[in-house]
Structure formats: C-alpha cells, structure tokens
Amino acid sequence: MAKIRKSEKKEMPALNTASLPDIIFMLLFFFMTVTSMKEVTYKVRFTPPEATELQKLEKKSLVRYVYIGTPTEEFRKVYGSETRIQLDDAFADISQIEDFIVRERESMDEDEKNLMTVSIKADKDTRMGIIADLKQALRRAYALKISYAAVQRTSY
Amino acid sequence: MAKKKVPEINASSMADISFLLLIFFLVTTSMAVDKGLSRRLPQPLPPDMKLEDTETKIKDRDIFVVKINSMNQLLVEGKEMNVRELRAAAKEFIENPANDENLPVKTQEEIEGLGLVEYTKDHVISVQNDVDTQYQAYLEVQNELVAAYNELRNDYAMTRFGKVYDELDEEIQKAIQKMYPQKISEAEPKNYGGNK
Image 1 (cartoon, rainbow over the protein chains, first blue to last red):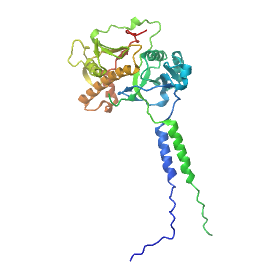
Image 2: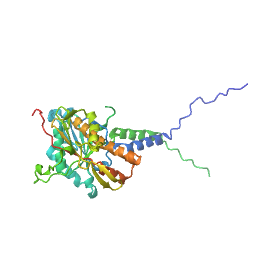
Image 3: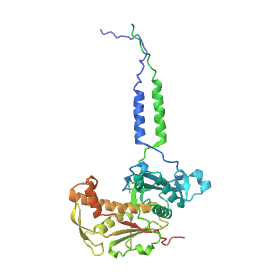
C-alpha cells in the first residue's frame, strides 16, 4: 500500500518574486517608448473633427500646435465662452500668431526650419472665420505646411 | 578556509519602485499619435500686389467650384450636393474619362517614368466657404477632395503597375503625383447670406 507521505512542514514555500522587477521594468520601458509627454495643459476644450485621409505627423520636434476651442470651465469666468486660440500655455490673439511662429522657427535648427509643420487642433464646431484668419496669419509668417488634426472616422 | 556567504540583498522593494515609475509614466504620457489632414498653404502675396492681378484667366470648363454655405450645405458647380457624392464628382472632374466638353481639357504630355500620358493639366478645384461654415463640414469637403486624388492615384498605380500607390518607388510616386497634382485652391471666406 502506498504510503501517503506527510510533509513535516505545512508552510507554503515563498514565491520567488525575483523576476517581478524585471517584468515591470520591461513594461515601463515599453510605455516610455510608445507614449509621449503631454505637450501642454489644455485651456480650451476641443473635440477634433473626423476624416479618413489622415497622415501621421512624423517628427514631433518639427511640429508646433495651435489650439482652437471654447475655454474650459475654469476659464469661462474670465474669458467667456467664445472660441479662443491657445498657443503653448496661454490664450492668444490672432495678431500673436506671426510672432509665435517666427519665434519658434528661430529656435529650430537651420536645416529644419522649412520643415516646420503647424498642427491646427480645432474643435469641430468652430466657425471657419477664425480658422481663415489663422491661415492668413500663417501664410504671412511663411508657415505653409499645415495639418488639420483629426481623428479617423469609423463610420459615416 | 570556509566559503564566505554573501548575504542576499533584499530586492522585494524593487518591484514596488518600478511599479511606481510605471504608473508615473502611464499618467503623464499620452498614447495618442497625432494624425491630421496635411495641406499646404499658398505663398503669401507680396503686399504691393492686388488681388485682381493674381486671378489668371482660367477657362470655365477647367474649374470645379465647391461652395459651402453657413448652413454647411454644398453647392457644387451650381448644383446642390451631398458630401458623400462629392468624391465621385471630383474624380470624374479630375479624370474626365469621356473627354466631355464641359470637363477640363486633356493634354498629352511626356512624364518621366510614365511615358506619354493624357491628363487634365490645368484643372483647378476651388473651395469657397462662408465665415460661419462649421469646421467639421469644411474638413469633410477637404477630406473628400484629397480622397478623390488619392483614389485616382491608387487606381492608376493599380492598372499600370499592379501595385498600391504607397508601395511604389518614390520616383514613380512623384511621376504619378505630377499626373494628378493636388490643385485645391481656397478663396477667402465670404458671407453668403449669413447674418452679419
């Protein structure tokens, strides 16, 4: 007859967690490479429009952003609920666009200056008047490569 | 001499530390890739030039007018149209398959890499929008026009080379781009019967 061996120790053996840090580090590096830091804190609220013929913005360092939308809740009291433009971290006026572009271009490398792309991140309910003004300002500043930020449309 | 045993380093907190880092990065970064509809703006006009000088004479048949009013309705070549029909209409205009008299003139030209091809060289698509047009409607129109060009390029690449446009060599892509150049001109927004 088989004898059921009773172990002397009832205690569970300690789980070897030596590889746990390695796994977590791997995850960490994965996320560090595929994600990017937030550029700014949004002061305007916008939902991007939908489109299908989208292209990726290749080099982040060559892209400058212009945000257009209605001010978020906390800024409503000061700035009202009219559509506003945000450059970097502050609200801006159409007249400041040109200066902004020129300033940003100055800080770029010489050979990359004409590759600068301006990404227009505007709310889908924005009226075209403000966007047309923006485009005119960009033309004057010689920032001719633009990209209308949009999300992929899934259905019609 | 007895072998000295190195005391094991307690690494149990290592996991916690890396977890903390991981969570920090998850919170501060964003996964979303920036995508957008790429366009190129025209060169700015010299300040001493008047707008009339730039309006070169373009024949009526070479121009495809898309107007968007403040209610986001489309008027394409004088007819009302739904955005979904715009792509097909634009494709027909650019291609002019039947050599229609009301559609742009086809010219034969030698293009490096493609040989002698017939294409509508002087066609222009003109988009005019209202100050009050919604951005989404405007972008949809732009999107459909770009899509029309992309489809034409793709169709041509398929029939001529049996490959998708994106998989072709850069030189041939350039040649096809020359055959189907994106000519979308935008007028200053007007106030068509808006409330101002």
